[in-house]
Every structure is written in structure tokens, then in C-alpha cells.
Amino acid sequence: MPDGPRLEKALDYLRSELATGRSATTELTTRAVWLAFQRFGRQRFDTAPTPDADGLLFQYGTYTASGRPMFTVDLTRQFDIVDDDGEHDHYVQVHCELRYEPESALDALGSVGLWFFHDTNADLDQWFEGAGARLGLLLDRRPAEIELYEDLV
Image 1 (spheres, one colour):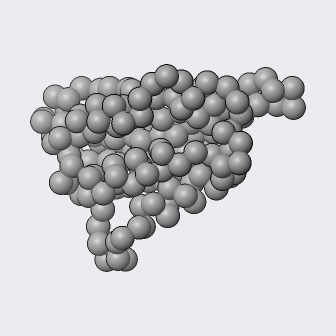
Image 2: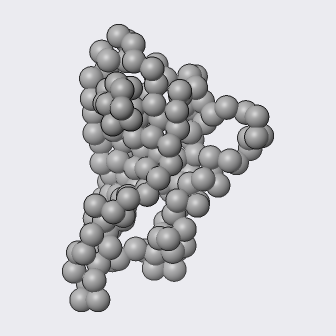
């Protein structure tokens, strides 16, 4: 979407949304992070005019990426970066990972991955509602760790 904020500002925008309405001593709950990610997901950025240029990914499962098994909720925004000819070059992903100590109730959730792409006929509110419904056990919990980062794919 032309005329939106530049993609280089996406991670800063997410950080700002996470800081909205909280003091330095307030720990974030899953609910607060999910609401911040929804605000971030609604903000359109200056992306290429293609249907897969701006996507949201909601995924979770028990992973060992941090060195030990943790139940991880990964809230991701993916942007398609095109070359001078308008062809796909790579993706930039902005991640907000919430990690929880493993427990049987969380492990029983298994794993899930749900995509949404702006500029398609999909309904963003429905996607947020469906993804958010999967967070029921976690909404009032505080993650053991929260990591924000950006990577190239």
C-alpha cells in the first residue's frame, strides 16, 4: 500500500504498540501483546502492489529454538521485498515471540500456523477472531520471555 509508513519502521511501530498504555514496571500479559499485535496488523505500510506483499502469521507450538523446550507463540508480519523490476527479491519478517515454560496443557495444544494477507478478499477481523480464540489458555498469563526481532527470509 503506497503512502503508508516505510517498512524500515515496522519493528519500531510494533515496539511502540507494545509500550502503549503501560508503565515501565508493568509486565505484559498475552492479552496485552495480542491487542498490540492487532493494532500493528491493522497499520498498513508502504508495500509492493501484490496480493502477498503484506502478510500476518499466527503460529504456536513447543520448540527448542531458544535452547530448551518452550511453548512459543510467534506473531509475525511478513513483507515482500521486490527488486527494481517489481519481481520478488526476499521477505522481511517482524516477529514478536512469546515463550512460556512447558506444561502438559500447552503441549496438548499441538502446533498451528494461520496466515492472513492484506489486499486479498480475506476478512482481517475474522482472522484476528479465529487466531485469538486459540489463545484462551494464555490470555491472562505473562510469558516467561518476549523477544522482538526482524529477519530476512
